[in-house]
Amino acid sequence: MKHVALVSAIVLGLAAPAFANDQIAQSLGVQPGQYSQIELARLKAAKDFGDQEKFADLMKLFSGDSVSTQSAGTSQGHNQIAATLRVEPGAYSDEELADKWVTFNGAR
Image (cartoon, rainbow, N blue to C red; front, side):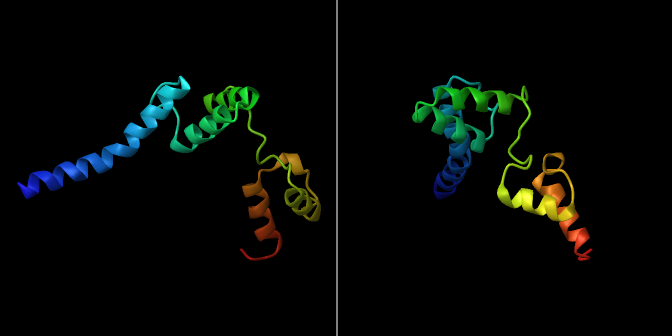
């Protein structure tokens, strides 16, 4: 009996996050399993704050219908590193600039 209860608890524990994600997806009017947990959280936050424009932008971004500019050189630090490397800030992602920075400083 204890074995059955333990196995049941483990199965429920593993299924709970997926079930919660499905409930959130349904509350947002999207297909369960279509978005990651983080994407669902961002969509839910936009909806909870009543920001329909942000919600629509996130839906476009997550569906692949638009291009993300989140790492396209909009931060001051990104621009400073790009200037130091003498490259166009918008031409490289943060990861690419970091890689160039490491190479530039001889750490590789």
